[in-house]
Image (cartoon, rainbow, N blue to C red; front, side, top):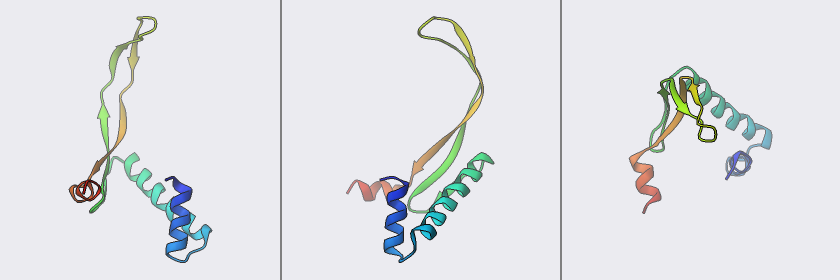
Length: 91
């Protein structure tokens, strides 16, 4: 399933136009992105939590050349599934 499938399903189920459904889905994705950029977590009860994890800068080795390279600190997006959702998909 991709974004277009979600838009089409939402439009059918809630009797919306494709444009309105697309605006809704895009707004949700944008708001989640904004919150993660600000370092906040986003929680959907019964579904899961979106959050970011920080990685420190480090020195690594290029496997092809063996050369040492510096890797900058970065934040990675993460998702933790809720217990309810986990149990639901594993019935």
